[in-house]
Length: 269
Image (cartoon, rainbow, N blue to C red; front, side):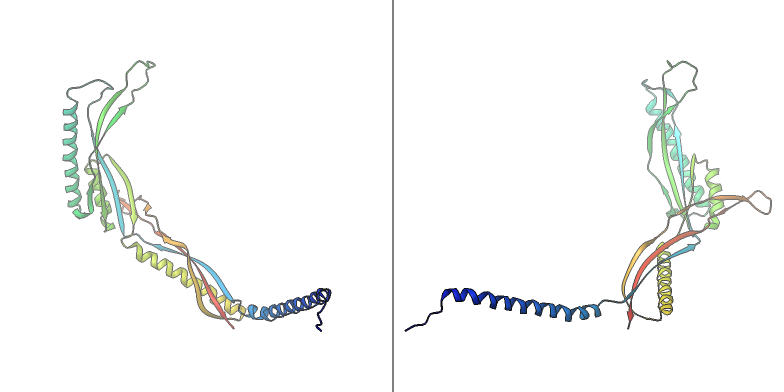
């Protein structure tokens, strides 16, 4: 004879067993989380984060000058054909080339190295002439042709600057765009500014750690917040010399280089 368990008894006891198993499983998970939480908390890093900036002021040791020379053809009514226009342009160009060559020789005689003198390419463009208003709008516009060349030079000896400026003016340049002061080795100045910012960051971190009575550990992160950079100074100030002889002195001032860093240290327990 076989004794089979009725199917309804399986339906009664199975949920109880499942409920008990689920309850034990949840309890085990909660216990695991409870035990893991202190361990995770212990691994939270203790750090000091510092941001620091530095400004380095340096005297420039280089100057750049940009001058322009131009010549113009005779003025004529716009739109009129002139058989002599090409000849006039050629004559203007010849005069310009002669003046450019004379300017370069004058600069070399003033002590500028020839390798530091750059003569730009020839530029040709129309130059529209505005006539004085006479109340008559029927007057046709007038135009002429302008041929132009630029000459730029770099001066490594700033003491020669007054002599070079005199040479430019005596050569009759048509335009002088001032003096741009800069540095021969800007990378070295950038490095000095960045080093000062890092030293400032360490000083701040050590002061904070000492105040809070903790010990600094290893550096864990370093970032540049402001990359070192500088802009050439466009400064040319003429002042009467103390001798009263009417000579001019040119002062370059200083160039400011900014640098910024963000540094993080571990705190030793």
